[in-house]
Length: 386
Ligand code: MRU
Image (cartoon, rainbow, N blue to C red; front, side, top):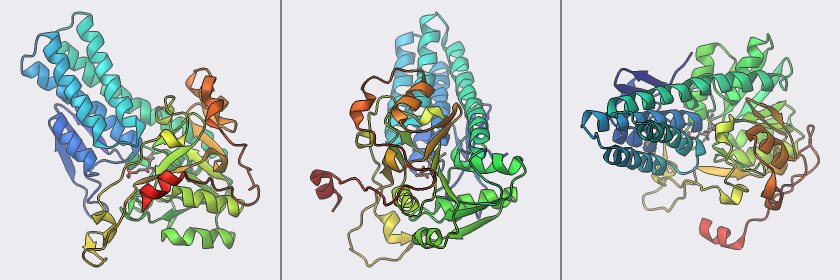
């Protein structure tokens, strides 16, 4: 199994995804600051993978506190809180990041409250980070098994970005669905969007599927609609960085475009994500923070400048697909359909409460329900874009 985050003695070793597919090199993190740097610079990327890495980063901070003799609980906590804050700030959109970091911090807190000394608190932090890693792989296998039922034998499955083993602790979410369908004996052909500007589809999805012997054809992002119009896409499955209570989904920039195209062409649009990607504190997509990255990533292609010097560029790293365009969301708990406010609350074991106020639209048709209803963006947001 491809593992992008490796826990080794006192080192967190990350498969450096900036160098794939050309080089398989490990980036070693010995403290939380190195993990922050790795997350910011995309050494490790993908929502669940950065959640696991952040958990490891907090565990490294706890070890540093223990090794530095921060024996007073308040001093120990201060070191951990500082690491959590830095990790959470590294990238804003994927909710798994804060989820993983805070979960380990809570374990440290509980250990100190119960009278554990520094080394014991640090050991519990490391175990918790390992548990998060193991749970992520288990969740991906479970959601893959649920999602495989949605994939017919012989299906041509379009995906965007990389929601595979590389984006998780292993196995993958969207690609977990594909892997599970293949393990069920089905023939599946993946169509991978290249995913400008960071090329996660071209560099990472193509690499990991090829490594596993799963047929994959790479396309430019702008080809997706043409292939759908020719009837060459049977379904779309993508991952998510954050899913709001009402089922709005933040994922890699370009996902929204694919969802609109899928609706236009009657192609089912599925989202595969573990429940750690569901954010009960976000009522809808408008509340999801969207990362804006360095425009230099847009003015260049694979590190080579392609735009004229001085031209302004924008780089929104994620977009939000409204729930009305989502046919179903697959988690380790099962297949969730509209009204998502109900089905996702049930998956999280929380009350529906104010979710309805978030304005969820009706179900997305399994076989397409006519032309897309594109939500109108607020004027303020429009101004902000250009
Ligand atoms: O910027 P990235 O590469 O971290 O973006 C990753 C994605 O958008 C993935 O689709 C998402 O995190 C789901 S990963 C299982």
